[in-house]
Structure formats: structure tokens, C-alpha cells
Length: 392
Image (cartoon, rainbow, N blue to C red):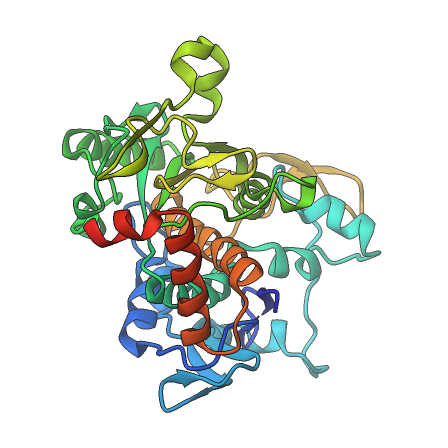
């Protein structure tokens, strides 16, 4: 069965819903692991006042019994605590009070084009769904995908490699163990010196009423070779991952492995040479490709980077136009963050996990988690990967 994740809900509505379909039965879930990921999305220097209100948790509403999946759709509910302050403005049903419309679209947001497309006069009917608050539901669903991957020996992690003009220095062969304390860093960066510069840069830009973008990297360790396919464009895992990461609000670029840097690299230095010995089997000494060749996983760590632009809600709004009067005005000003890159990386984990879990489901099927494991074991034995897995 194909794996699918769907979200619903508005930023200041009653809450957010996530439905995940396609997970096998018998998968054991960890309530604390779900809670940790929901809290991790709220981390990072540069977050705004909303994070002081929301203490996100994901409540399982269906598809799970006594901590194990049943094989049917799983629904998760994330309460918006801030709804109590917005109940009249965001009530699903008509209210007696007059609710003022919003007519000031923000440059860089979905506001203006959304009102055209959906024939709306109130920008709030667009911005509420377009808001990155929706990613809380994605992270909730991503925790289920990560639980499935973990049951198959795969771990998904992330870190920040750039904020504004500050770049971290991180080796390409960084090990999984290096990520153990990343959430304790104020910007979730593995380079402590760069982290301090990033914090200072965010603080300085915030005082100037600016927002700041950056780049995060998501990695998956323990991935089996041969997920995805070369036979059609829609089955290439590169494209599926790029689409998933690019769907995150504010994302403007996705790179696989060394990504855009490979465009300026000679071919002799851009590819990962292939070696073989009796003990290790096939192996690579580099991973320029980020664990993907020809649309398929190679067995090396999967590495994907995403670039986030500065968020469009500014404390000193940009110039805009009132969509009712067509008069020049300043864009809408609302409570906002100054930097969301550390949190965006956690959302990136969720999106990569959902796509990767779907690729495992496509290849190995199985109605129960043990069916999946057995099919995976047979495949890895056939291609000689079981020996490498055992050594790891």
C-alpha cells in the first residue's frame, strides 16, 4: 500500500489534523518520541511569541491500539491553544460580533495570489492555511514515518548549516553519533563557533526589524540500496524528495548531496567511485551524490539540503496595496518569528521520513511490520547488503 500523509487546519483555528495512511499493522509507537519531535519543532533562537503560547502535542485519535498500529489510517490531533484568543475571528460557524476583514497582503506570502485564486476579499481566508503553523501537523505525521523507518534500522536527523551569511563547517562524512546533542544548541548547529555567530546575527537582524533565512541539512542513516527507480520521472526518489522539501513554507531551493556545488566541480571529482572487497562487499569512499544515483538510493547516508528564504511577516512591514481600496499601504503586521531555520530542519526531517517510508512501502509491501522486515532481509541478503548491515 502506498503511504500518504494529509494535513488539515488553520493557524489560529481550533487545531490541526494529520492523517497518515499506509503504515503496516503491528508497528510499535513511542508516545514520548512523538512528544519530543513536537517540542523540537518549537526550538531555535529567533522564534516569536507564539512559541510561548503553544506547547504542542499530538493526540492519536484512531488507527492505534495499545501502542501499536492497526494497519488502517491513523489520525492525529494538535490543539491550537491560541484559538481561545481568536475564537470570534476563526470560529467555524457564524458569530454575532462583526469581524473585520484583512485587506493588506504581504509581499512574499500567499496572501495576494490566494485571494485571486480562491475569489476571496478577506486575506485571512488565505493566510491562515498558508501559515507555517501547518507544519506542526506534518511533524506529527512524520513521527509515525520515523517510527516505521527506525523499525527497519533507519535514523533521520538534521542540523543547520547556514543562517544569513554565516556558514557552519561540517565534514561531509559526519557520523550519526555527532547529532546526539544537536537539539541543545540554540540554532541546532554542529559547529559551535558558527552557532555563536548565527545567534549573534539573528539578534542583530531582529533589532533591525529583519527576518533571516538559511540552509538546513537532513540526513538518513542505514538506508537500504535500491529505493526509488530510474524507469520513470515520478519514481525517481530525487524528485520526490525535492518536491517534499520544497513544499515547506519559505523553501526556495533543494540540493541532494553536494547539490549546487557539483555544478562547478569537474566530473572526476563529482562522482563516488565504486570499490569491492570480500569482507565489505561494494562500498564507496565518498558520498558526493548524497546517497542517490539514477533516482535510487545507493546505501550511503541520504543527504538533502533545503534553503529557506527570510519569512515574509516583518515587524517593519514592506510596502503593499489595500486590496479593497487599491491605495498604497504597509503590509499586514502580525506576531512573527525572526528566524525559523532550526525549526524548519525538524519539519525537513518529517518530510524526508514520509517520502522515504513511502519508498520502503512501495518496494517491500507487507500488511504487518514483520512482513516488511522479512522482505527487507531477503532483499538485502540477495544483494549482499546483509553483511554490511550486520557490521554496522
